[in-house]
Image 1 (cartoon, rainbow, N blue to C red):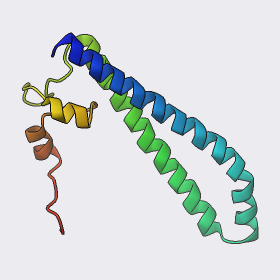
Image 2 (spheres, rainbow, N blue to C red):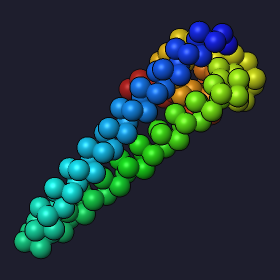
Image 3 (cartoon, rainbow, N blue to C red):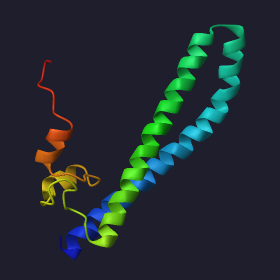
Length: 122
């Protein structure tokens, strides 16, 4: 992949990383404010609601952590020159696919084999 394209995708990945980190910081701030409310609600009313909110927060943190790991891995591939090369077949990952998801590590054909796309309405 050309240096110009690598620069473009590096910029996209870094912007995604900044956005994701901003979201995480905002959620941490918000969860600190909600903590008092959640605890009061848990004591006063239903444990189920407080537990559901806590589980949702944990699930979002895990998802965002995985996204950050994927971004860091893509940036590392840019650094070592393997960005844009499918980790399964060694073929080129299409530019359109990388524009849609700059974290992609597989070409579309290999990605479909790993995680098949379900038909609409299924």
